[in-house]
Image (cartoon, rainbow, N blue to C red; front, side):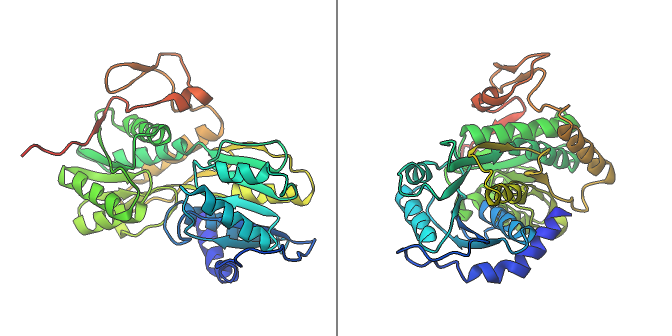
Length: 374
């Protein structure tokens, strides 16, 4: 399985990359071996955060191994994604260490990489911006993918675990477009198993582990039998483990911290993008642009399932994955209504591209958590 390979590679190669993790503090660019592509990563969190940083780090390690000595990995951790100056300084630090490629790993941030790429001072440096929106067709590229596909499959697993009905809880930071798209896709996956399933979302207002765990606990107290999340899988799984009679769905990185209570997780399989991109750079064929991956491209994946997921459910997930790969299953298609009764999608209609990114609220079947009045 891809996940198993990635985890083993992290263990085997992690110490090599760790030597570069502290950075050099900037300065003149180091001499580089022309036969080796030196790649610097800027991670918003720790490479063992169980979240997006760890997912992309696992991809970085696997891509380095796949390139058989042609790629060297350097990285900086815990760089504030909301601070463009900190991101710029981190990129300059990595460039000073001899990196020819900078991979920015915080979704939704673009200003720092765009500023450097277009400054004229770094025309020989390639910037790969994860979850960004900017490109210059030369040395700045953005890459992301349809994680809603993974969340849809996770919704199937979640609903199947509710053998006698019940509520699925979902912890999210805020009702932004990306968050709501994933939540709605998760709900549609669950509804494909049981159209009566109830999903309750709590918006924590932040992504701290404490806020996420507290959100999960509130949902469990309110009757949730499965808890999923947009991010912060480790915190949710901790809350589930403490409750003892609730199941967990992970988010963006496939790690099980709650034993038999773990159902599955959608995740980023970053090597699907990184390896061919590094190959194109080494061949002089890189042209920048936008990359949007999917289940079909391999960038979006679904983890193996825990023992609470039946073989029939796993077969349904695999069939769903195959239909996505063949481009015959569109998540946002047919009649779909928002929770307030407005029409999101009509019979015979299929939402694509900007239509999907115009989704701005919860669909029918989802309620927003509100504290019980005392």
